[in-house]
Image 1: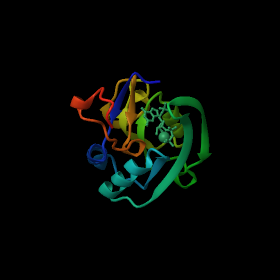
Image 2 (image 1 turned 90 degrees about the vertical axis):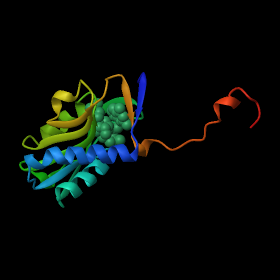
Image 3 (image 1 turned 30 degrees about the vertical axis):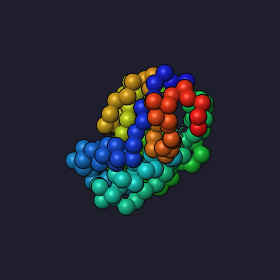
Image 4 (image 1 turned 135 degrees about the vertical axis):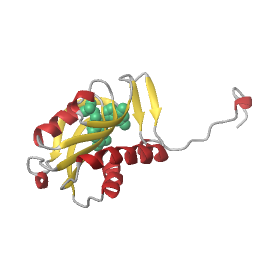
Length: 160
Ligand SMILES: O=P(O)(O)OC[C@H]1O[C@H](OP(=O)(O)OP(=O)(O)O)[C@H](O)[C@@H]1O
Ligand SMILES: Nc1nc2[nH]cnc2c(=O)[nH]1
Ligand SMILES: [Mg+2]
């Protein structure tokens, strides 16, 4: 389990994805985007809109169950992207870098970009927006929901 948590809101994610799109434009144009599902799907959709790219392929890699890291499994290969030449790979984040390494092996000629990078995964990315400490678990907007919390003054009160 992580020691710390960092919550990313929809607004923040949108801003970070637009910032990544801005630094990607001079590296393009791209034939298409390969989104690493599931986490890369929403960032890829935002970036596709900004860089004006309509061809989206997916690669599905399952590595985590909740916060538990397991053996990575490729559920769907990115067949439409060939060896990756001219393609851009988008994921939400790199943590250990295992997922990025597998995707890079499948698409050796593609550019790999993500929004957030922890130190272990950083060397596996070509571009990212924000570095996150290794001991921090990023909570994406799709992982969370607003929750009622009682006012501080009522803390410890037995009243509902
Ligand atoms: O660098 P790593 O240690 O490999 O971790 C990063 C990967 O972990 C998460 O995916 P996850 O396996 O949880 O699947 P999901 O995207 O379908 O939620 C995240 O979306 C990255 O793809
Ligand atoms: N949501 C989420 N998924 C991950 N998969 C690997 N690391 C992380 C993380 O920090 N947050
Ligand atoms: Mg993922």
